[in-house]
Structure formats: C-alpha cells, structure tokens
Length: 215
DNA sequence: CTCTTGATCTTCT
DNA sequence: GAAGATCAAGAGC
Image 1: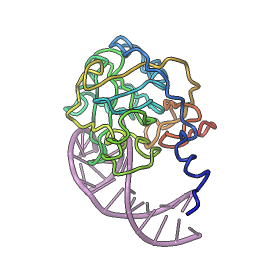
Image 2: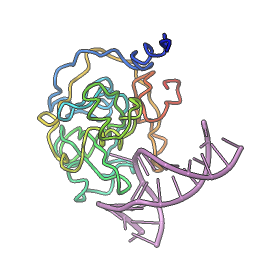
Image 3: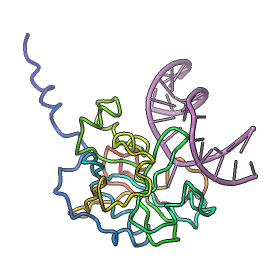
Image 4: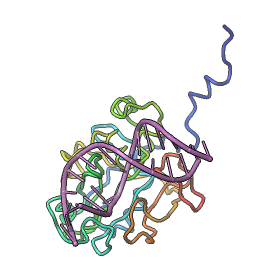
C-alpha cells in the first residue's frame, strides 16, 4: 500500500486558531479576583485553568453581577448561590438545566455577588483524560462550552465553594496580553444586550463565534 | 448547514 | 407549573 503523504502529517499539526503553548504565568492570588468583575473577566482570557492537572487556556468567559437580572444572584442569596455572595477567589459551581455543571470564579468582595462564568478552554493538559470523560476525540469539542468543560475537567458540586488558589485548582495567569473579542452573553433573555462576553480573538475553541469577526 | 427536542435540577410564580 | 448562564442527537434543507 502506498503511504498517504500529506494527510497524516497534517493530523499532527496544531489545530488552526490555537495559540502557541505558552509558558504558564504565576498562580493567580486571591487578590487578582478581588477587583471589578469587568476587569477580571477580560484578564482571564489567556490564563490557564487546571483541575487536578487537567485543563487548558481560557478562551471564553462571561461576567455576571448581582445588580443585573441575568445573574443568579439578582434576587438575593439562596442555598445554590450562597458562594457567590462570599469572598472572591472561590469557585461557584451550579447545575444547569438539571444535567450539566458550570463553574464561575467569584470576584470583587463579599456581598458583591459578582462572578465570571468560564465558558470555553483550549485543551492543553490531560487530553487523554478529557477525551475519556467526554467520550469524544475532537479536541475542539472537548471544552467548547461551560457544561462541556466542566465534564472534561470532572467539575461537580464537589468543587463548589473551594478556593481557586489551592488544589485541586491551579489557575495560572497569562504571560502576554492577547487580543480580546467582546460580545453579548449566550443563552440568556434578561439583560441580553450587555456586552459582557469576552473571548480570545481568532480562537476556534470558543462555544460560538463572536460576531465582531473574532471567530 | 439550520431547526427541534429531550434530558430533568433549582428557583420562582 | 414554568423557565433557565446547556448539550447532543435527529430531521430537514
């Protein structure tokens, strides 16, 4: 059988739209999260998020704040949203549509009830574990949505309320400043006009394209 | 490619 | 009873 010259080598190349495997920045301290959610959210783009060593580069997030009706915290604390009302630098994990888990990073200060929803990663660490948990091979489908990445990283309510600055979490800051795409948030009907979605411009690992040309 | 639907937990009406 | 910070599978074009 003649070899297949070009196709097999192409399959080893990085997926187009991926960033170069950058050096990990410093672990983000609690202080990083103790600022306006609108400062923290775009600065998380390009950071690396690992849970028990499995994860990747954050390429899409959304900001939520108690003062705005799309936020779970809008109507005050409940058993589910209690963590959002606590101090910054902790994980708020909630059940979505009764089936999926989604993870937020709590920001600002106790009582602010502001958080950043992590919506998509470019997988870089523990690909085999992610593929096993997701039952998929396609790298671009592993973490391209909040429910998907929680599944790939084995995030459940067991992580709700845990500090982001200690195991099993490892959140490393970025080492350079990427171009950021912005847009309206996905899948909400209230306060749908607010442009509080942030992405890595040109990334093909986001859950949905950004309409302002960012893919 | 787009559109529709089922899965079924937490909260609100 | 209904809606929701979702996803995957199936139908149709």
